[in-house]
Amino acid sequence: MNQPSPQQSGVSTSFGRCLMKPDFFDRFYDIFLASTPTVKEKFKNTDFSKQKQLLRQGLSASLLYAQGSGSAKFLVDNLRKTHAKDRLDIHPSMYPFWVDSLIKTVAESDPKFSPELEKEWRQTIAQVVDYISAGYQA
Image 1 (cartoon, one colour):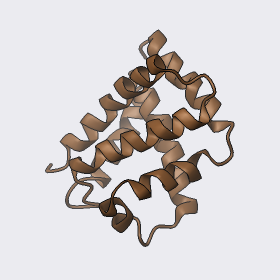
Image 2 (cartoon, rainbow, N blue to C red; image 1 turned 90 degrees about the horizontal axis):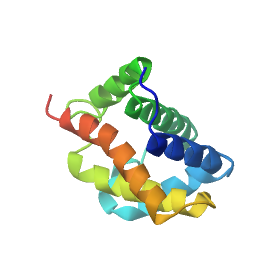
Image 3 (tube, rainbow, N blue to C red; image 1 turned 120 degrees about the vertical axis):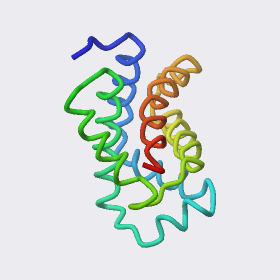
Protein backbone atom coordinates (compact mmCIF):
# COMPACT_ATOMS: atom_id res chain seq x y z
CA MET A 1 0.00 0.00 0.00
CA ASN A 2 1.17 3.51 -0.74
CA GLN A 3 2.01 5.83 2.09
CA PRO A 4 -0.70 8.46 2.52
CA SER A 5 0.23 11.91 1.37
CA PRO A 6 -0.02 14.75 3.91
CA GLN A 7 -3.20 15.76 2.04
CA GLN A 8 -4.77 12.34 2.52
CA SER A 9 -3.72 12.24 6.17
CA GLY A 10 -5.35 15.65 6.63
CA VAL A 11 -8.59 14.43 5.12
CA SER A 12 -8.54 11.24 7.18
CA THR A 13 -7.95 13.25 10.34
CA SER A 14 -10.73 15.63 9.36
CA PHE A 15 -13.08 12.70 8.78
CA GLY A 16 -12.21 11.43 12.24
CA ARG A 17 -13.21 14.79 13.73
CA CYS A 18 -16.46 14.67 11.74
CA LEU A 19 -17.25 11.24 13.14
CA MET A 20 -17.12 12.75 16.62
CA LYS A 21 -20.34 14.57 15.72
CA PRO A 22 -23.19 12.10 16.33
CA ASP A 23 -25.41 13.78 13.73
CA PHE A 24 -22.78 13.97 10.96
CA PHE A 25 -24.56 11.52 8.64
CA ASP A 26 -28.03 12.86 9.45
CA ARG A 27 -26.82 16.35 8.62
CA PHE A 28 -25.25 15.13 5.38
CA TYR A 29 -28.55 13.66 4.24
CA ASP A 30 -30.45 16.80 5.26
CA ILE A 31 -28.17 18.85 3.02
CA PHE A 32 -27.97 16.29 0.21
CA LEU A 33 -31.72 15.68 -0.02
CA ALA A 34 -32.34 19.44 -0.15
CA SER A 35 -29.73 19.93 -2.91
CA THR A 36 -31.97 18.99 -5.86
CA PRO A 37 -35.37 17.34 -6.38
CA THR A 38 -33.66 14.56 -8.33
CA VAL A 39 -31.75 13.46 -5.24
CA LYS A 40 -34.84 13.58 -3.06
CA GLU A 41 -36.69 11.42 -5.59
CA LYS A 42 -33.85 8.85 -5.74
CA PHE A 43 -33.98 8.40 -1.97
CA LYS A 44 -37.77 8.40 -1.47
CA ASN A 45 -37.95 4.74 -0.38
CA THR A 46 -34.61 4.59 1.43
CA ASP A 47 -33.96 3.00 4.80
CA PHE A 48 -31.79 5.80 6.16
CA SER A 49 -30.54 3.79 9.10
CA LYS A 50 -28.95 1.36 6.64
CA GLN A 51 -28.01 4.13 4.21
CA LYS A 52 -26.01 6.00 6.86
CA GLN A 53 -24.03 2.84 7.59
CA LEU A 54 -23.37 2.41 3.87
CA LEU A 55 -22.24 6.02 3.59
CA ARG A 56 -19.83 5.63 6.49
CA GLN A 57 -18.37 2.49 4.90
CA GLY A 58 -18.22 4.15 1.48
CA LEU A 59 -16.45 7.23 2.77
CA SER A 60 -13.96 5.15 4.73
CA ALA A 61 -13.28 3.01 1.65
CA SER A 62 -12.99 6.13 -0.51
CA LEU A 63 -10.31 7.63 1.70
CA LEU A 64 -8.38 4.36 1.73
CA TYR A 65 -8.83 4.01 -2.05
CA ALA A 66 -7.29 7.45 -2.53
CA GLN A 67 -4.28 6.16 -0.57
CA GLY A 68 -3.94 3.18 -2.94
CA SER A 69 -5.43 0.47 -0.73
CA GLY A 70 -6.11 -2.75 -2.65
CA SER A 71 -8.86 -3.86 -0.29
CA ALA A 72 -10.55 -0.48 -0.60
CA LYS A 73 -10.38 -0.78 -4.39
CA PHE A 74 -12.55 -3.89 -4.12
CA LEU A 75 -15.16 -1.91 -2.16
CA VAL A 76 -15.00 1.04 -4.55
CA ASP A 77 -15.32 -1.35 -7.51
CA ASN A 78 -18.50 -2.61 -5.90
CA LEU A 79 -19.79 0.97 -5.52
CA ARG A 80 -19.00 1.58 -9.17
CA LYS A 81 -21.05 -1.48 -10.16
CA THR A 82 -24.01 -0.77 -7.89
CA HIS A 83 -24.22 2.90 -8.94
CA ALA A 84 -24.14 2.10 -12.68
CA LYS A 85 -27.03 2.73 -15.05
CA ASP A 86 -28.24 -0.88 -14.95
CA ARG A 87 -28.37 -1.01 -11.14
CA LEU A 88 -29.10 2.09 -9.01
CA ASP A 89 -28.87 4.38 -12.06
CA ILE A 90 -26.92 7.16 -10.34
CA HIS A 91 -26.25 9.53 -13.22
CA PRO A 92 -22.86 11.29 -13.16
CA SER A 93 -24.65 14.66 -13.04
CA MET A 94 -25.71 13.85 -9.46
CA TYR A 95 -22.19 13.54 -8.05
CA PRO A 96 -21.47 17.29 -7.81
CA PHE A 97 -24.48 17.59 -5.49
CA TRP A 98 -23.11 14.74 -3.39
CA VAL A 99 -19.62 16.27 -3.21
CA ASP A 100 -20.92 19.76 -2.37
CA SER A 101 -23.22 18.31 0.30
CA LEU A 102 -20.33 16.40 1.80
CA ILE A 103 -18.12 19.48 1.85
CA LYS A 104 -20.86 21.57 3.50
CA THR A 105 -21.35 18.88 6.13
CA VAL A 106 -17.62 18.59 6.80
CA ALA A 107 -17.38 22.39 7.06
CA GLU A 108 -20.10 22.36 9.73
CA SER A 109 -18.70 19.35 11.57
CA ASP A 110 -14.93 19.82 11.57
CA PRO A 111 -13.85 22.69 13.83
CA LYS A 112 -10.51 22.81 11.98
CA PHE A 113 -12.09 23.12 8.54
CA SER A 114 -10.33 25.62 6.28
CA PRO A 115 -10.19 26.54 2.58
CA GLU A 116 -7.03 24.41 2.29
CA LEU A 117 -8.74 21.43 3.90
CA GLU A 118 -11.70 21.88 1.57
CA LYS A 119 -9.32 21.69 -1.39
CA GLU A 120 -7.77 18.52 0.04
CA TRP A 121 -11.19 16.93 0.56
CA ARG A 122 -12.29 17.80 -2.98
CA GLN A 123 -9.09 16.41 -4.51
CA THR A 124 -9.29 13.20 -2.51
CA ILE A 125 -12.98 12.57 -3.13
CA ALA A 126 -12.65 13.46 -6.83
CA GLN A 127 -10.49 10.37 -7.36
CA VAL A 128 -13.31 8.10 -6.20
CA VAL A 129 -16.18 10.05 -7.72
CA ASP A 130 -14.44 10.15 -11.10
CA TYR A 131 -13.85 6.40 -10.98
CA ILE A 132 -17.40 5.54 -9.91
CA SER A 133 -19.10 7.90 -12.35
CA ALA A 134 -16.92 6.60 -15.22
CA GLY A 135 -18.59 3.22 -14.71
CA TYR A 136 -22.08 4.58 -15.25
CA GLN A 137 -22.47 3.22 -18.82
CA ALA A 138 -20.29 0.14 -18.24
